[in-house]
Amino acid sequence: MQNERFPVPGSRFPTFAAAFVAGALVSAQVPPPDSYRSVAEQYVKLVLAVGQHDGDYVDAFYGPAEWRTEAEAAKKPLAEIDKQAAAVETELAGVVVKPAPADVEMWGLRRQYLSRQLASLRSRVAMLQGKRMTFDEESLALYDAVAPTKPVSEFEAVLKQLEAKLPGSGTLIERYDQFKQAFVIPTARVDRVFQEAIRGCRGRVPSLNLPLQERFTVEYVTNKSWSGYNWYQGDFKSVIQVNTDLPIYIDRAIDLACHEGYPGHHVYNALLEKNLVKDRGWIEYTVYPLFSPQSLIAEGTANYGIEVTFSRPERMGFEREVLFPIAGLDPNRVAEYYDVLDLVDRLSYAGNEAARQYIDGKIDRAGAVAWLEKYAMYTKPRAEQRVKFIEQYRSYVINYNLGKDLVRAYVERKVGREKTPLRVWREFMTLLMSPRLPSGLK
Image 1 (cartoon, rainbow, N blue to C red):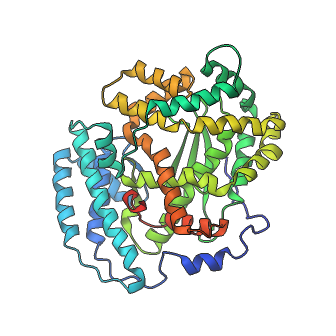
Image 2 (cartoon, rainbow, N blue to C red):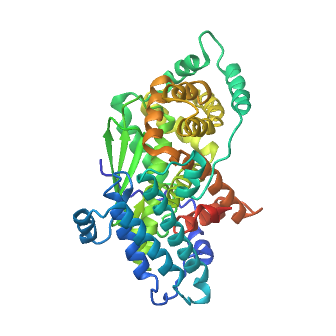
């Protein structure tokens, strides 16, 4: 379905525009001649070249169509791609830029971004050539970050609390699954619930700097290893796909509407296109390599954006008054449901541990499924789906939870002691439209 561009009801942020412009990272001054243009163009073409060997690598591209055609026709060997990337790294090191004083930070971030993205590209090429890395080595090489290793005792402490919340017979995962059955969105109501969730998320996102023509469509798909995906098309348009292989629980409506749409991937990509591609001419942002540091920023902001958009009282109120009734669920159980979900959310890093052990060869596929069932509270079908995701995307899993934690810490540090919704939005939106790296969040 084609969504409407929802207005911001009642102007939740009446002074947002003035405050945001005063503190925005993006300078209004005319940029200097683009000394990075050659490097940026070569980088884009190298990403497209890698995409000929890795079908998942190019997540989005809206640059010159002939560049994709050239990449498809040439299908450069991996060794040649790596050699050319090394030469581009050398060229980048020699580029000298003298920006206006107000623009120094942005141009410094641009250099760091191109440098780290090129290094990540070379690491992915090495993997495609057969190089083996541990989970942590891979995540650092590709995503510029390493997730902390969590002890089993941390998960066991949470599971004990869940035991108390979910008394009865059967195993804990059986009791949890039975509990959640009362919160499944009926198939016939899924689309309407998602439309209202999108409306609710959009209505809480400040409109400033969002292009007037931004739009996205929602499609329902099957046979995927993920639950939702945003395919950015360029020109401020996205296609968002929702996987209906497994039952969809009511909390996923807001999670996916925010994460994939407002203020998640759709807004992130639209703001990058507007502020960096259209306004500045930074061609490197017309391509998005999935296995790169950019993904930690993209996934981290998309997940943190959920709590920026909805405070806990606002979310529970919206669920109780709007989404639960539309889904035909009991609105009196909202608080009970989220009390349990809050505990389960504290097990998110158990998924990282399953992926780390599986990729490092310490457990096999069956062991990874069992680990997710025992420590991450995945039913067997969901655990099997998650292992398929790990097999396809490997250490990418860190981008969701570690990414959210790093983004939250960065925004809160920038906001400081005088934390208000306005200040949080300003710093969050500034991050969305800047070329900052994961290592730059620390």
